[in-house]
Length: 171
Length: 171
DNA sequence: ATAGGATAGTTCGAATTCGAACCAGCCGCA
DNA sequence: TGCGGCTGGTTCGAATTCGAACTATCCTAT
Image (cartoon, protein in one colour):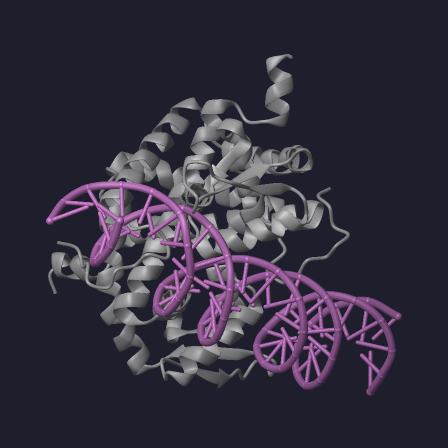
C-alpha cells in the first residue's frame, strides 16, 4: 500500500497525534473551567460566557441572535439560558424599538456584580492553565493560527446553529 | 487605577482576545464535526471518538474507565454510549479475566467497517479546517503548546470526571 | 483470614443541548 | 396595498451529559 493511499484515508501518525492531543486538551480545559465555575460560583460556563459577552458589549446589551452566534450555541439554548439568568435577576429582556421581533438582553447591576465576582477565579485558571504557558511570540503565533482556522470555518459553513439546510452540500 | 490592578482582575485586552478566539474556534470546530458526522454517518462525535480509540488500541479493546479518561467524559456517559453502540452491533462487551468488576469494550467487525466508512469524511474536514492551515514548524510549535497545557492540566486536577471530592482545594 | 478503603461500572434524576416546527414582524416588489 | 420570502425568537421533544448514590470486587495491612 502506498503511503499516499494510507494518508488519504487516515492521518499521518504525527499529525494525528496533534489532532488527538488538541481534542483531549480542549475537552479537559472546558471541563475544568465548567467545574470550577459550577463549584465556586454556581454558574455554568455558558452562563458565564453570556455574562462576559454582555459586559463587553455596547450598552451591556445584545440581541439574542448575536449572542447565539458569539457563544456558538443553538438559539433555543440561548433562550433557555437567558430565561434562567433572567430568573436569577442577572439579565433583563428589553423590547427592541427598531424591530418588534427583536429582544435586547441587558446585563443588570447584580449581573455585573456576579460576573465580577466570578471573573477572577476563572481568569486565574485561564492564566495558569492556558496563558502562562506561552510567551509573546507563541501567543502571536497562536493568534495567527486561530485566525486561519476561523477563516476556514467561515468559508466552510456560514450557516448558524439550528439552521441546517439539508440540500447544501459543499459546491 | 494601576495597570497591574486591572490585569489582576481582568485579562490584558490582547491576551483576552486570544482566549476568546480560542473558545470561539474550538466550539465551532466541534460543532461542525458533530454536524457533519451526524448528517452523513448518523453518529455523534463522541461515538466516533469511541470507535477511533478502540480501533487504535491493542486488540481493539479498552476498559470502560480508560475510555472515559481518553475521551474526557463521565463514566456514566461512556456506559450510555457503549450501550448504544452495542445495540448497533458496533462494539461488544467482554468480561475481564483479571478483574471481575472490569469490562472490556471491543470493536466488532461492523464497528471497524463503520469507522472506516466515516473516517474519510471527518478526516478530510480536519485536514481542511485544521491541519492545512499550519506548516511543519507551526505544527511542532502547537504540539509543544498542547504538551504544556496538558501538563498544566495534569498538575492542576488529577481527578477524573464524575469523581469530585468537595474538600480538595488545591494545595 | 479479614476489615476498611479504593476502584470499576451501572443506575438514576436533573440539567442542558440540539434541531424542527412554529409564530410574528419585516422587507421588497408588483 | 398586499403577497411571498426572510429573519428573530420561542416552544417542543429527543438525546446526551453530568454527578451522586449504589453494588460488587479488589487490595492492603494487620
